[in-house]
Image 1: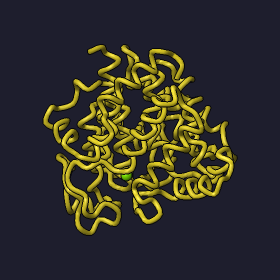
Image 2: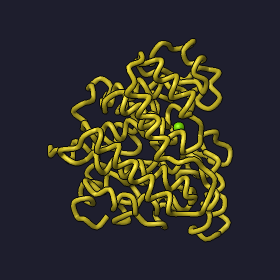
Image 3: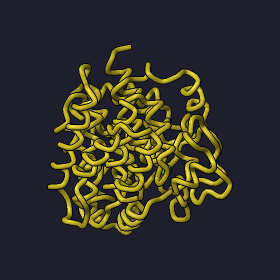
Image 4: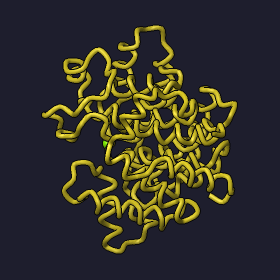
Amino acid sequence: MTLLKDKILGGLYGQALGDAWGMPAYFDFDQTQAAFGPFITQFYPAPADHEVHSGLPAGRITDDSEQAFSLAQAYIAAGGVTLAATAAAIIAWYDRTGGDTSLYVGPSTRRGVQALKRGEDPQRTGRMGDTNGAAMRVSVVGLLYPGDPIGAIEAAAISALPTHGTNVAMSGACAVAAAVAVALRPDATLDAIIAGGMLGAEIGRQRGTRWIGASVTQRIQMAVEIARKGTPPLARLREIYDRVGTSLSIVDTVGAAFGVLAMAEGDPQQTAIYGATLSGDADTVAAIACAMAGAYRGLGAFAPAVLAVLDADPVMQSYGVPALADGLLALAQKGRA
Ligand SMILES: [Mg+2]
């Protein structure tokens, strides 16, 4: 297997790993500590009283990976990242999973999909979307632009637009896509990945509808500073939870994701442990962070037993992830993504 193929597979499995590992975490840090503390070190089923994930078995992926993999399928079929392919893939996912009544669907995605279904202009349907859905699904866009953060940023803005068209959401989505693109370089470093993320955040903030939101760039910076303090890991996670935040706000989510990536020094498994333990929208933070970590370290950094759990999940199986890696690789190498 080539290094690039290993890294693309690492990005896809990282997305799934963080998602499934973070799925059982509660929103509240202390509640997660009481149930699973001090660290979430294995796949767990969702607790019966979990507001969103109740009933899900251990190792199950959620909306984050489902949407990311749906986009990957659509971009492979379309021969690149287009607005039409993005809108069609998100609507198809929404309908397939019973979006009108599903707890999975975030507020911006629901608003965007409903407007798209009313026949509104996809350039405008996402004009108020400012939550984290654009970032949770965008890692696959970065995987199409190995070593090309600028290309990834341009494509990420297109992939965000139909549901998350605000400059706040574009900033978060472009940060993640650019970081993944940099992570695919054979000589990638963690500092270069973080710098790529901040570049994406700055360029993305110049796109889309002007909207309300703090700086993703500065939130990444704050999270990485906390991550690199000398305090114990659990204290650093609590500080990220308290100061950076882990809500549905894309500014919180993306900042926190870079924080746990830096804390784990880019190791996918450790990133999953920290991202899940962080609580809040843990599956989304961990999915984003682990996708970046997986693209950095490659599939070879994952324990075979962990991959076996993910491969056994019927939802994961339904997306045919190994074939997605082949399709993304072929498209990336054609340079016409
Ligand atoms: Mg989720």
